Image 1 (spheres, rainbow, N blue to C red):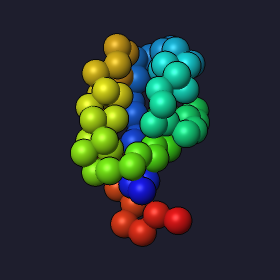
Image 2 (cartoon, rainbow, N blue to C red):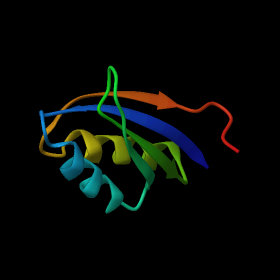
Image 3 (cartoon, one colour):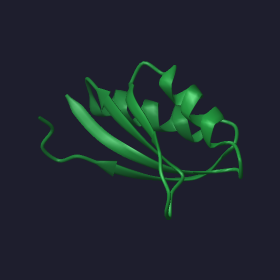
Length: 77
């Protein structure tokens, strides 16, 4: 099992749209609206590293996503 978080910056005012899109993705278990350096945090679970990378690529291609930072958890529970 691979677990990670992706921190997203979105176009101004599009945060709710991005969260709705994230929640429709199979590998995204949670998506949170945040205040601070990033607008949204998504929690991702996949079966393999390859699937994890594909999930990240899909998220980065979402419209209204400006930039991302990926945090790959070393020892998932």
